[in-house]
Every structure is written in C-alpha cells, then in structure tokens.
Length: 448
Image (tube, rainbow, N blue to C red; front, side, top):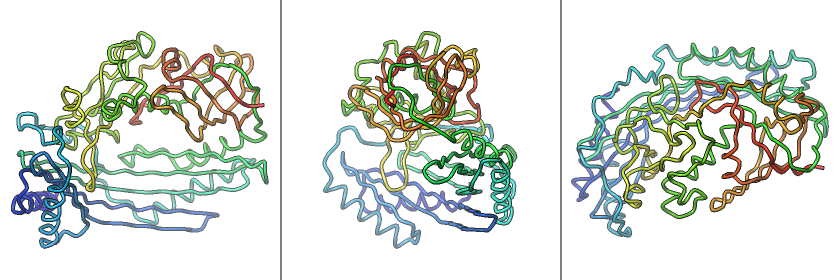
C-alpha cells in the first residue's frame, strides 16, 4: 500500500477537525484502467485513464455531509472540509448515523490470503490489442457469423485507503484483466446477437481469447431462426449465465435499506422458509481471487462469512451501521461506498448450494418448457415480489432443445419461484455470485 493514499486520508481527517467536525472518515482511491477495442482487425479505440479521487464525510452532532474531489492539493482539502462542515450544519438530524465504536473495528487482516492483486507487469497496449484481435478472429472463423460487433481487452488496477477519526486506517489493492466479444449472425430482421467474456483478478487465470470469441460466435449462430414460444404455463430453466439474477432479486429484497424503508416483499420473512430445505446461500468475503472479497467494509468493520439462507430459512438482513441501528440490530459488516456518498449495505461474494444433476439432466426433467439464456428489461414489484421479464433462449420438448425462441415474457412471483427452485451442478466457482442453472416449475410464458 503506497504511503501517499494513507497520507491523503489522514490530511483530510486533520482538515475536518480543523474545520470543526465532531468526527469524520476519509477515503482516497487511485486507479488505472486501459481498454482496447478492435473491429474488423483494426484498432478502433484505445483508452487509458489514471487518477486519484478523495472523499470526506463529516459529522456535526447527528448531522452529516459528504464531499469529494480529484484535486489533492492541501488548499483543496482544507476547502473541502470547510464546505462539508457548513453543509452538515444545514443537514437534517439523523439519530442513526455515526462511526463505529473503536472496539468494533477490523484488525490484523491478511491481505495476502485474499489474493486481490496480481503483481505481474501491467500488459502493454499492444498485448491487449492482440488479445482483442485473437478473440475477433476466432469468432469470425465460425460458420454463420456475419460480423463481430465488438472485441475488447482491458486491464485495471485500483488502490483504496480508508481512515476515520475513531482510529481506523487501512487499505488494499485490486487488479483485473478482461476479454470480451460480441458476435452477430444472420442479416436484416433475422440478425441475432450474443456474447462471451471473462474477467479475472490474475491474468494467468483468464480464459484464452480464442475460447471467448468462439463461444460468443457459437451462441449467436444457435439463435438463428428464433421465434416466439406458445403462451401458457411451463417449467423454465434459467441457464447459469443468468440464474444469478433470481438470487439478485432475493438479495435486493433482503437489503437492510429496503427493509428499513418498508419496501420489500421479504418484510416479516426473517426466520421463514424461503428456499427448499437443504439449500444454503452463503456469503464469503474471504474467498481468494474473487472480485467481491475484501478484508473490511467501508466503515472499517471486519468482513466475515455468514449464511443468508440456512437450510432454506432466511436468517436476516444485509446491514451497514446506519440501517442496523434503524432496525435495532448489529451491522453485518456489509457497508460499501464511493468517495462521493455515504455508506450503504451491499452483499459480498455469495454461493448457492448446488445440486447433483447436470443442466442436461434438468432439461430432461422439465420435459417441455423454456431454457432461458438471455433476459431484457425488468418489472419487479418490490412490495409483492411479482416478477415479469423479457426473455430469449430455446424451446425444449421431451427433454431436448428444439429451436431458439425470443420475444417472450416470463411472469410469476419471486416468493413462489424461489420456494421451488431445483439447482443444477454447473456454477462457475470463480465468480462473485456462484449460482448454478435453476429449474422453476409452473411459470407463465407470454409468446404467441
């Protein structure tokens, strides 16, 4: 961890104290990103950005204000602190805001065990361009592909440091490396598009550009000739590519902010059966080489594994300090924030219990129904859990894929859907959200 970010954070705290703040926390973030786009074998766009951002949150009594800047000169930080204190004095009182007690703070974390940063050399722009070219060429080589819409390669590194007047100070580095490709098949109104991509913390873990380009191409070719399915009630198998969206709706409803506002279809559901028995939803912020891992949250509290769902039963909410105080509970160490806003609760890495069956086994089990591989739009009633989304994928009869489908809508109720999910065993373990393909019986399809 470079000393400069630590010094910036401490300088912001001193400026806040000098300006009359009762308490404060400060964040400094430095990052580099490089993105290369290739089209038709020619470099289309190359972007590089570098910068440092700083943010300061101050408390005056039970009032708070947040300011941020990308200028790190001492006079700028002094002006930031003065403005923040003046803003806080005009803000409404909130009895729930405030820093954590010192005895709640994270200590003695092991950054090396998390493996959040790849210390190999930053890839040269030419190397990124070559990766993008290889992905595009691989996609173009697949019969049926009419064009490659985009092929990209990117690298990023980020350093974060947090300090607060309650004594907390700490930071960490992150890196990421990515390749993606979007391919198109067909012509005119019969054009179909699909994609593939991979992002990893360590460059050595990244899938080959050829694999990514070929997969994107095959996916779009498989969609040629798509038509609407029949309207009716059918089982739906959510492919592993998009199944995490279902669990995402659950996580959003179990967020402490939604519960505190009273705008969640899970209100009153704590301690009740939500998933089938035998299924857990585990949050693990300490999983190595995973984007959602971190040693502490944005309020300096230690992160720790927990079961959001235990044997199908909802155990509680995702909380930061303020929402926990509103609900009369303790923070779960899930605060996130940027430099320009105060903390809010958000989950880290999650993993849903996998089943014993493969996706093909579940296709056979469903008999006749829809395999969903892509979704667009979303109409979710936050208070009732009523669910409606546009979808495309493949029609299945007698357990076998028959033809591609598009322009259909899936509807149901999330509480009912989640209560009868059947998981496959195909989740990708390196993702932050490890969720396998999920079969849900009896959903309403609107097509022809």
